[in-house]
Image 1 (cartoon, rainbow, N blue to C red):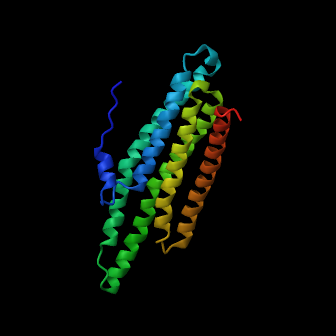
Image 2: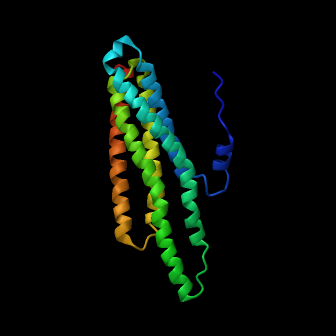
Image 3: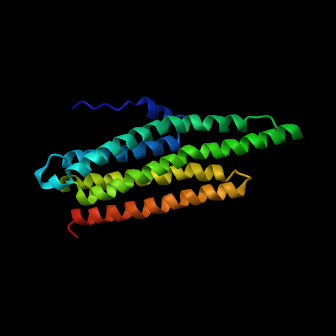
Length: 209
């Protein structure tokens, strides 16, 4: 199988341009986690040993394909979401009127800039829920790939949270900021604890501990 990686996006990520950045990279990690989970489900489907899990695996494949594609879409959406914020930072602020207008636009742009990172985190949480089941019910021949997948998903969730926190830090509306922080905190906690538990279990099984 000839599988080629397009370097263009990674060249853009490597550049001094503000996008793509950490948000897009986090979404990519989520898509990678979903794709690995699909691989495990595909390796389970059609096996006599896992006949009882056949329908569940097929259901997972449908859900994971959607989550993978949505995560890939969020790479571009993250870049688009940064544009209004970048424009807001460039607004003039010489007069009181300009300062007031800039502050109003900035407030809206900062909240908007948190939407895609939160979406990346939520997609990651959904993928992770499926990964937990794959670790238990998927082919044991591919359990190591579940271990890799949960680390990709962990990275997607925690990575995207950085884009939430950097924006909430600049918000003057601290109530909104803390609400967004609390949502990110909750998703981070669940992703970390779940991914770490699954990874440790698989690692222990592979090392025969």
